[in-house]
Image 1 (cartoon, helix red, strand yellow):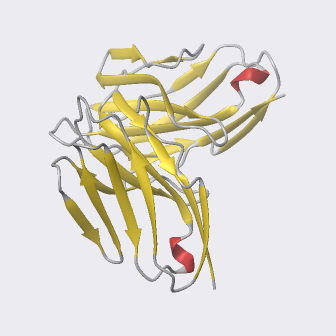
Image 2 (tube, rainbow over the protein chains, first blue to last red):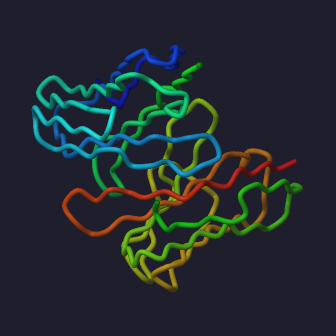
Image 3 (cartoon, chains in turn green, red):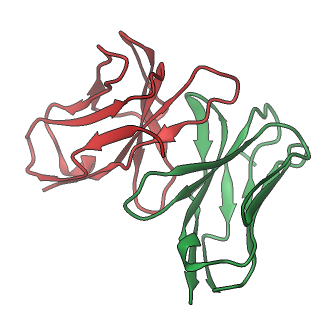
Length: 110
Length: 113
């Protein structure tokens, strides 16, 4: 993998469903993996930054895992709520060398 | 909520006009960044600064210029706007520490007619 790739591109779930998406990145020269949540007309909000293989972070109903050896990270949302509707961005690297994926757009309907 | 501000939020302007997009942060961060994003695409870095009087171009070529005269202020200028400059521009800042989380402003959506 040469770039940061996210899948799926978009996702539509019902309120209460649990969901997850994937971020794939080049496993060589890994520095850090960042997840952001970006709601329409608002600033992207930092969710997690992870650096160690096997790292797992949690914030409320949202959690993330990291596998640096195979170059992927998963973001999980347990019991999705309409307010979770947003675009979720991942980025690998640091500073001026932070490479972003195109994001996963999540829509949660009541 | 991060204290980083961008103005204007939306701008519609004619070809050939000079525009300045403002970005300010009150967190005292040394590092600031400008990203450009087209619909459905990744954020691409166009400029960054690691401190006062320090500016560098990012990996995406841009006709815009930036300045960093004060720590808190990092404006972006287009001397002569063209339709190809239509895009969303996001400003971010970060501390100089190990993990360097970048904090973003809400962005400026620019439409050049």
